[in-house]
Length: 113
Ligand SMILES: [Cu+2]
Image (tube, rainbow, N blue to C red; front, top):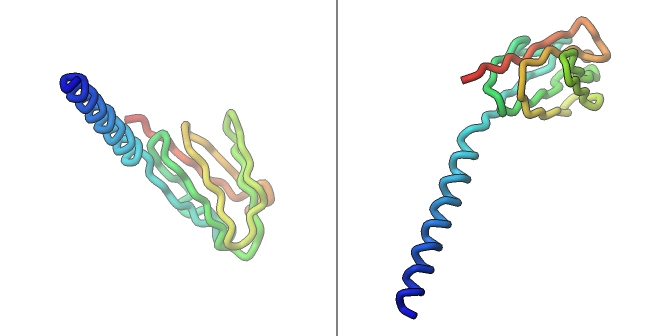
């Protein structure tokens, strides 16, 4: 009986340390990047990130804008008013424009390392 309790305690210790290791490694990997929208421009126009990073666009312009990918597997944001933001997990290099002002263009470059 005493032996079984020792084995069980040991097993629980291993399980909990594995859990801590997994949550720590997940927390470190993803980084958030900000792209500001103002004066009909994206800043930065070209942004380099790692796969799995998060990009957040923030509309600081007085106009409304709508982000739209022009790369394969495209996506589109809702219409963003001043103060609104749009968040995206990035998996691959993407070119995007504003669906309301097609001369506004930007790029998210995903580097592999
Ligand atoms: Cu726009």
